[in-house]
Structure formats: structure tokens, C-alpha cells
Image (cartoon, rainbow, N blue to C red; front, side, top):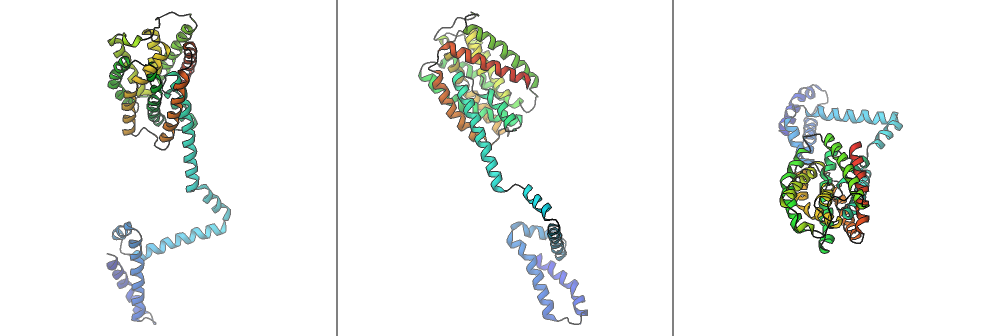
Length: 354
């Protein structure tokens, strides 16, 4: 194709060369060879060059001349106004600047994951209550990417923190299994609904409910509210059907909002099922691992995860989750209840103002 184009161009130019007084055959052959070489060079430089030339009209020299004229105009403009050219060049970010920005966002995501992991591991909340607003407000991540990334952080916190609770017998495998089975059926539904429904109204209702529950837990910590007497081993005698309903509601909310489910499970287990605060936190972390896996996989497959920062956030969540769970094992129950009620109230206010 390139040789055919060059031959046709040379044929169109040969009458002009013959009419020129100094026209000779060697000069004409030299011009044809140079034209063919200019045409074939892009095909050897890039594989797409051959396709580009094969689809172009059979006047290639004019396109090269046009490109040369454009480059010449740009050079002349830069020479006439060097300050404007330098400003335009500085406005384009370099590769080094892009890498520094990406690394800085990664470190910020790691810090967010560490703080969320520490609070979530110590209070059994998973950390999603902090990750979503932090990524949205501090790193300017889109809400759906914040929710998807938060699901991965919740999974990391649950896996890292539940080990400390299980080793000390503070997590009921029976209750956790019942909750997980029910949550598995609704976590995917909630994660799928994230991109289809605007959850603003649901967030406000959920925030109001969290504030009410935080007041009840705080009142119970100070002995002002006596609903549900707490006793060790409540997970082994808790009724199955209420646990199934609680798990279904928790899984849907976890998948929809990207939270760990502890904001629903821990208050319900302590107020309605007689769990002690440490056992409720351990059961919440253990029971939400399977739904968190489903929610993370669904968000990842639907492209709702910020792949540039998720690894950093998960690494920070693993470290924070281990540290938080170890600290919770040595705190008295009253202190845990007070801390949990304060954090829950803050989360509720955040959801109401979002």
C-alpha cells in the first residue's frame, strides 16, 4: 500500500519534473526513494502506522507537510511568548508528580484505615462508619467508590480483630453462624442496590436510629436503663428466628451503606438478647465476615472499588484492627459501653448531616 501510494504520487509529480529544465532521471528516482522511505518509517516505528497509512488517502506527503507546519507554528509561538509556553508546560503534570500524588493518597488512605481499624476493632463496628465519610471528604473519592472501598476495609478489620475475641471466648460461634447465614442472603442485594438507589433518606433514618440507640446504651452503662439483663454465654441460648431477622437486616444495611454491621448488631444484641458488651462485639465481628466477603466481591465486580488506594486502606485496617481488639480485651465493660455510645452518637449525627 505504501509503495502504491508513493508510485501514484511520483507519477503525479513526474510531469512537473519532466518540464523542469534541470530534471534528470536520478533526481526523480531519488525523490521517489525518499518519499517511499518517509512513508514506510512510521510503519516500522509503531505497528499502528501501517494501518493508519493504509486507510489514508494517497497523498501522504501533504499530511507530513501539514504536521511539520503545525510543529513550526508551535515553535514560533513559543519563541514569541516564552512565558506563556513555560506556563502551559508547567500546567501539565509530570510522571514524577503523578506518582507522588498517588503515593500521598495511598498514605492518607492507610491512615484512615488504621484509625477505622482501631476504633472498629475495639468497639466491634468494623470501621465502615469512618471510612466512607473520610474517603469522600478528605480524598474526594466518589460516594460509590467510597462504599466499595469501605467494604474491603470492613472485611480486613473483621478478620484481624475477631481473632482476639475468639481466643478469649468472647464470640459465640452459634449466634455468629446464624447471623452470617441470614446476612449472606441480603448483603449482595444491598450491594447491588447501591448504584441504583439514592440512599440519602435511608441514611438520615439510620442516623436518627443510631442516636436513639446510643442514648439507650449510655443509659444502660450508667444503670439508668435496665432492658435486657446481660449474662455471659447469651449467644448459646438466643432464639434462632430473631437472630435470623437481625442478620438479614444487618446484611442489607451493610451492603447498601458499606458499614460493617456492628452499628446494628451490637446494640441489638446488648439490648434485646442479653449479650455482654465484649461478647456482642466479638459476635458482630465474627458474624459479619461472610457477608463482608460477598459485599466486597460484589462491589469489586461492579467496579465500585478505588483500586488505587484500597491496598493501602486494607493494610492500615489490618494493623489498626489487631491493636484495637487487643485493647478492648483489657477494658472494663462499662468503659466499652460508654465509648460505644459516644461513637455511635457521632456516627448518627454524621449520617443525619450527610
